[in-house]
Image (cartoon, rainbow, N blue to C red; front, side, top):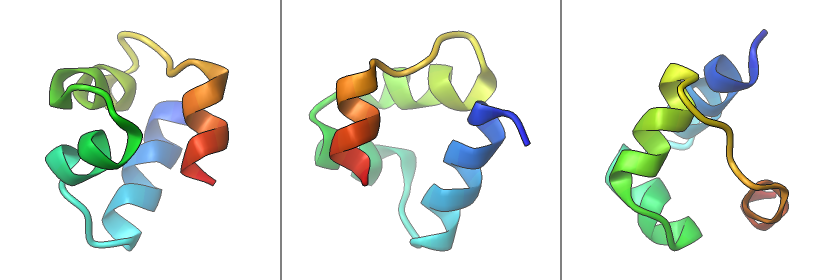
Length: 51
């Protein structure tokens, strides 16, 4: 499973919208969209914060 797919899977499993995840991680909704589509990857600090 790719990182982008894992982000989508985990977000949906928690019942969160992209907006909610963005607020939780203090990033924009557009950043979450780019992570989920594989355009960019999150900074390691954001991945640690999400855990």
